[in-house]
Image 1 (cartoon, protein in one colour):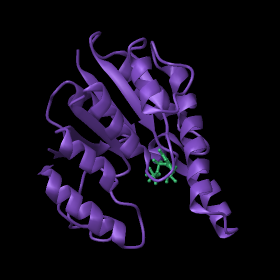
Image 2 (tube, helix red, strand yellow; image 1 turned 60 degrees about the horizontal axis):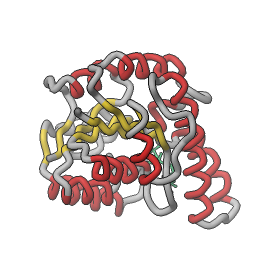
Image 3 (cartoon, rainbow, N blue to C red; image 1 turned 180 degrees about the horizontal axis):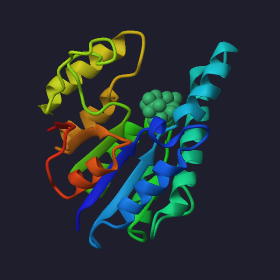
Length: 225
Ligand code: UTP
C-alpha cells in the first residue's frame, strides 16, 4: 500500500486568511486517488506564522518562543484543512509517534510542526522515514529547484533531477545568505538521503502536478534522489 507524504507550504494554503478554493480542490484530488493510497500531509505556517513572528521578533522576543508561535500557526492551518479530507484525523498530532499511530487508523493524517529548531519540511521527512514512505512531495511556492533565484535571474535553469549531495550543498549555501528561505531545509534533505526517500519539488498550487506524481507520471518539477 503506497504511502505518500506531502509537505504543503504555508504560502500554498494561506491567503487572507485561507485559500479556500485551493484547499477544496487539493482535498478533492487527495480524496479521489486510489483506494489503496495513504497520505500524510504536513502543513506549513504561511502568512499566519510570518505575521506573528515578524511582529514579535521586532519586539525582541527570543527565537524559541517565535518557533512555538510558528508551530501553533502550522497546527491551526492543519486543523483548517483536515475537515475537507476523507477518512482523516480531526485532532492534530503533536509528535511523529502520534502521527504514525494515527496512520494505522486513518487513510490520511494531517499535521503541522512538532518542536522548535526546524520547519515542517523536516517534520515531513521524519514522518516519511518513520512510516516507510519512499516519496515525499514538496508542494511549495516555486515550481522546482533552480540553479539561482528565478525571481532575480529570469533565465535561471530549473533542474529536472538532482542528487542528495548537490541539493544539500545548494541548501547550505542558500541558508547562509540573507533573504528568502531555501527550497527545503538542510535537515530534511539529510534525512531523505540517509533513508533514500525520493523528494519531488513541485508548484504547490498546481493540483495536476500532485496528481501526476501520485500516479507515477512525468511532472515538471525537480526530483531529488
Ligand atoms: P514552516 O514550516 O511553514 O516554515 O513553519 P518556513 O518553511 O520557514 O515557512 P514557509 O513555508 O517558507 O512559509 C513556520 C515556522 O514555524 C516554526 C519555525 O519558526 C518556522 O519558520 N516551526 C515549524 C518549528 O519551530 N518547528 C516545526 O516543527 C515547524
